[in-house]
Amino acid sequence: MLSQWVIAGLLIVGALAQKPGSLKKNAELKMDIQECSGQMDCTTLKTKVTLDSNWRWLHADGEAVNCYDGNLWDEEFCPDTETCTENCVLEGVDAADWTDTYGVTSDGDGITLQFVTQGPYSTNIGSRMYLLAPGGHEYQIFKLKNREFTFDVDVSELPCGLNGALYFVEMDFDGGMENYPTNEAGAAYGTGYCDAQCPHDMKWISGETNNEGWEPSDNDVNAGKGYYGSCCVEMDIWEANSVATAYTPHPCETVGAYRCEGTECGDNWSDERYDGICDKDGCDLNSWRLGDQTFFGPGGDFAVDT
Image 1 (tube, helix red, strand yellow):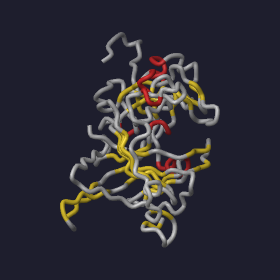
Image 2: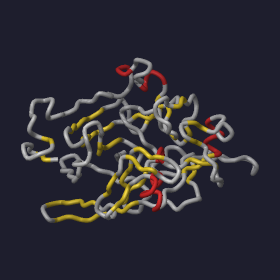
Image 3: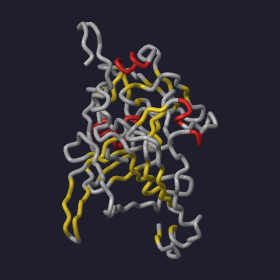
Image 4: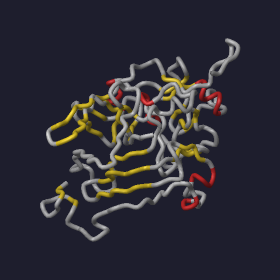
């Protein structure tokens, strides 16, 4: 899910900023990739994986007190966007968090994801991760025109009804630090997510908290939606489980990540899905629906045996 593309005053005044926390060491998982210019002519890149900011602990600066708990913002720390952005930090994900809280492990060449993980403090559902370039300060950029992109994935334990996904989105290469001076956390902390669905569930958008107009979900104890959405072009390389797969481009009338509001978000709940700036349906290729019912599925009767 990667992309191409000072407040001065008296000492008693705090600076508005999306800051990284200091209570845990932020660890990235090792996952090397290779770039090849010909057969057997490949260079290994020491890339790593980081966790999306939406899954991270969001707490008061310097205190182990939640700014966001369950699916609600704490009104003491977050009475408004400016105050909330100043008061709250994104915490690092340490080695224990990766396995015990999020159910993600690495063998150096790849990662294994668990769908449900009963952690020490809560139950975690799913995860979203990004590939960091060597050095760990920017997202790995893929320029795929006239090039091949390959990956291996095991979906044998991913049943119908669940969706594994590998895709590209037009996030800022540094997570938004250059475009939004209030963002001091950056790519290493998984900031800057956007996609063609213009998600409103993002807790941070454009370097600020998205607590304005926040509505807790009535069917998800960990989620809700804010006033703003986060839009950008999306290219779904692989959305699949063991019985189905799809490949889908989603164009948008945007360049890079864009914070939307109102009709331009194309929200379903306002019946404006087809009035927004992104093609939420996309133009997908699903082999089964298009007539080839022997291409992808479990068992030897399929060309791709999952």
